[in-house]
Image (cartoon, rainbow, N blue to C red; front, side, top):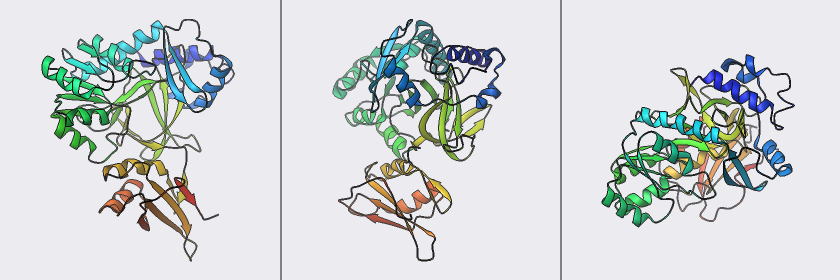
Length: 377
C-alpha cells in the first residue's frame, strides 16, 4: 500500500465532500505529498455534526453504518463503503500479521450492534488467517467456559472486561485491548497479564477513524499503523506540531473515503516521538485537551491525572485541580482527591507525569464540583 497515493485519494474524496469543499478549494490533490499534510486545514467533530444534522440520511454508496453517542447530536452516524471496508480489512490484517496473529483462535468480546466495536477487529483478524468467534460483550462466565472448551488463543475486548474474565479463571495467551485507558494507567497491564496468563497489548481508534495505532510485542508505545492513518500531535492552541511535549492527537484516516477524516482533531492528549519513520505515542493516549490551564508556566491538562489516580486505586474522575496565588504572587497548585487518605507515592507520580511541582495533595471523601478551579483571576 503506497501511503502517498492513498493520501492523494483521501484528499481527492475530501475535496468533493461538502464538509471540505470550501476549505480545500485551492488544493490540488494530485500534487499532495505526505510532507504537505501539515499545511492542510484541520477538521473538527463539530463540523461533521453540523453537516450530519443538515443531512441526516445515509449517503449514496454506504454499505455499513455505526452509531456513536454524541452530546451534540444524540447519535453520531459513521458510514463506510464497500471500498472502505475492504481497504480497512486488508490494512489491519497486515498489522495482525506483523504481530504474528495468524492461525489463531480469536474470541471477540466487543459489541457488534450499534457501535463499531467488534467490527473494527473482526474482518481483519479473519482476513489475516484466524478463526474468529464474534461473541460480543457480557457473559464473562460463558467466555471462560468457551475458552476452556475450544482453547481460544486470543481475547479481543476492553481491559476492564478482560480483567473480569481473568478473575473468573479465563486464560488467554494474548489480549488485544482497546476502548479504555489501559497502558497509560500505571500497573494496570502488569496486573492483568499476571491474572490472564498472557501478553496484553493496547490499541487506539475511534468509530470515525478505525484503529489507527497499536502496540508491538516490545510494548514500547502505540505505533502509527502506516496503512491506516497518518498521525500528528499538535499544540491545541497554535496547531503547530510538537514532539516530546503534550499535545492533541490529530489523525488523517487512510481507510475512510465515504466520510473522509482529513486532519481530524480527536481532542485526545498524547506525546509524540518519531521512530523508524513512524510516529509513536510512548505514553499512549492519556487524557483530553478539552480543558487546559497554565500553572507555573507549564500547561496542565487536568484529565491527564485520571490514569495516574486509577493506578493508585482511586476513582479516575474523583479529583479536583485547584490553582491559587501564593502571597508572593506565584502559582499554588493543589490536588484534591476523593478518598479517605492520600496514597503514598501519589504526589511524586503526579509530578513525574506532569513536570509540575504540586504544592499539596488533600484527601476529601465527599469531594464534588468541577474538575478545575482557577482562583487566580
